[in-house]
Length: 265
Image 1 (cartoon, rainbow, N blue to C red):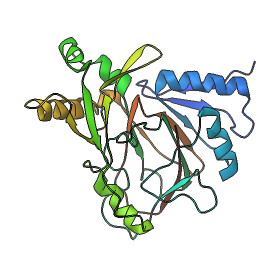
Image 2: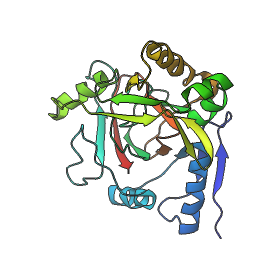
Image 3: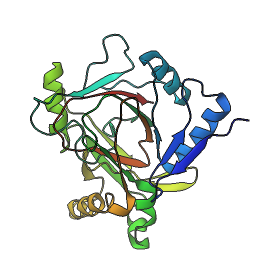
Image 4: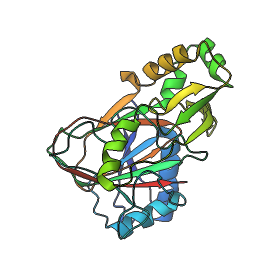
């Protein structure tokens, strides 16, 4: 049995995995899956996967999901290109805490992101926020309050502005609003997590006068420093995260950056 070498981040928000994904074995993939369930986000540094190898690795985690807001890669339909040029203005795509496509009836379980082109070191980091830790830090009264509540999520939530700039670049603007509802508390391997995307949540079902106050509380609580980690990209790096246990956010930067994204049903 080939053991994976790994190292959790200092605050246990995620975990670095040290292996060559070109030659990863099935028993190692099983271990990677267990680590993903435990830590929520995994970082694979210094990889050199081509598009087909990248797709093949991601297929070990499920079926690729369609992203309704952008056109796929012209040669590889499972890959969506997220690109920013140094001449672009406005916010970066995905700048603001969110979980991917929470407005869908069946949101993607996992997201892969691969760095194809990156700006200079220290720019274009991605922030991750561990929602296992965020849930565990809630007062018991708040845990009880949200246990059976459902959030209302919209593709026109406040993060939509960052997406629409890039949609216009790709000629896919004008998409209709998509909405869905999901439980605010979910469970992975018996461990509870907050599922509330600040970038998409627009209401809470069966809660009227208090819903704005509760959304504001959760949105602030979920991104506390104790639950966060800033990942700096180098070309070839891959991050893999669970959309049920992790928020993420692009950061503001100027420069050229190209990322390949795959989401998994």
